[in-house]
Structure formats: structure tokens, C-alpha cells
Length: 86
Image 1: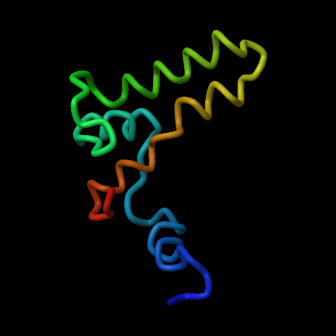
Image 2: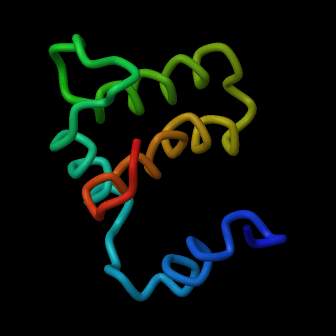
């Protein structure tokens, strides 16, 4: 076991050499997967990101950084499309 958890993922993905995508492209990729944590949702996964960001914007209109975090919080889930487990 590595003394530094995540080192192999850092080596594999940390250089961003696998594929370059815009945030919008990643949001679109989210719609291609079924999230094991919420498999019965019948609308695209990207909607969750937009709903989260909008909910945060309404609750905290002065925190732009928080709106962005709400939008980005699930983007890592697309790694399942590249062979990572959910």
C-alpha cells in the first residue's frame, strides 16, 4: 500500500494529459452515465449541477465562488467513463 493515498491517480490524471475538455463538455458527459448513488433519477445528471448552483445562488447571492463550487461538485464522476469505479 502506498504511503500516499491517491498517488497513482495523481500520476495518471494530475498532468491533465488524458483528455482536455471544457466544463460544459464535462457537464454533457455527466449525462452519459447512470449515477449509482441516484439511479432512479429520470433527468440528465447535468441538471443536478445546474440546480445545485442555482440553489446556492439564491441562498447566497454574494458568494460567487460558492455558486461555482455547486456547479463543479460532481464533475469528477465522469472518470467512470474512463475506467474508474463509481
